[in-house]
Length: 79
Image (cartoon, rainbow, N blue to C red):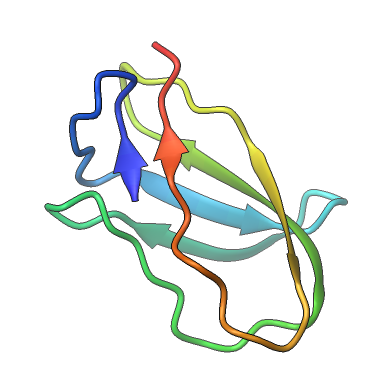
């Protein structure tokens, strides 16, 4: 879920999932509820998640995939 620093839902944010080397593996857009989904399987390993939306800044997050489903992530803006 993509949220502002004030807990407002952020629709239409671009969420990129990159390798540690910076290669984009997936890019999705958040829906009207700020939710985003990746439905195609990804290889095990570490990835960096970064959200983008005009007027917002988001810290990047690192996740490690290991053959199981990932719990929902919260990406919160800092501005």
